[in-house]
Length: 563
Image (cartoon, rainbow, N blue to C red; front, side, top):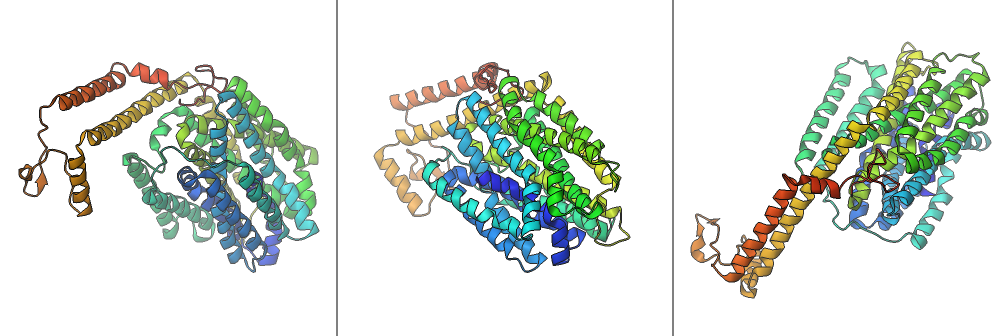
């Protein structure tokens, strides 16, 4: 239920855009911000939401998100102006950022069998896809029968019901070792996305080569470079860039950006086209797009079964071909475009969107350690929201620039804007083909072995620290505790007053006792075993972490989990 209202809210607002323009006197940029204020905040906070659920408890964070999302929806329905509507949409997004990744983390930790997990993820993808596809239909009904405010009312009872059901049926769970908070990384993510989106949306009015526009793009680029460098050096980063060395995972995130940019751009332009060019009512516009919603409903569970039985390659290729073909059919839109032509294009786009969700989700979650399922789901959902934000920003700005002589006007028949959607569909096709082949599987296996070796190193260091603490005498442990309480630096057992020099601790000389010799031999054996695993014997680590497809057979799925 929570996933349904979050997915629904991504698209239901589109059908109300013409009504919002009239009632709140919104410009083209204002309409774009009505959508992007939600998706931008969602994209910025999703990874934080996933890691927070891993740390504080998934059910607790999930319920907190439901409260914020429901309250934000109620406030949106009462917004007196466009500015307040945008602010309340951001409140909604803060709550939504706690729902999607935490829900996927709950699924991943509940369904441990790869085949069952693939089916559950397929159902999850189907709910998201269906809710987003049904948004225009439900939104059109509510806008015409009540008002645009009603599209937010529907979230309130559903949110309350989901809150109660989560308390009754969702078990509390946490990651065994949750990642530390990363405020610097989180701030950099916000700066990157906010400056890029703001620059794109405001470019048609300010000018693409204006100083402000170029400065915003420069801030975004520099912040992105700093983010990658900073996160690459952290032991527990917000965004672990090492996972992008695996071509399937990197391809999945790119596919998510392209696919959801195409969807967001399609819904933005198509809504404006049906209501403002063809003169349809909100309800009729929603009904006209029903073939797209129907194909999404039908194809989403089929995609989940295909991923479970044959891997991600087939549904991704189908998605790329159909999304591209459907978008090409809409590049010549006009007042007299026939309804059969429109319906055919909508069917193809709906089929493609239904097929793309399950392989993206399955890849992102099963390609990461299960203990960090919240972070994995956060990255997948972040890619989707980034795609939606950029889709509305770029495609809406291109359509507005097409009629730059009339301020605040979007041309939904802009060929440039529709061809941009075509390129997004082609990107899904190309990345789907490139990230599911033999080469891609090889990069996934090498990355899995590397990550397993790094995990072994961390485990060995932790065990050595624990061994050293265990070998301390009670008197030495008491002395170290006293020094820590007094603010001094702790010293190892056996360090005398003469073992410091110039305020610095020298390495202690351990007494040559049988226990110490045994400890040295134990650590030497551990490190020797690790060197054999990470050096000439790394094949063993690769074998232990070799991806397994949803069917449980080695190498069966191109997008495979790391054990």
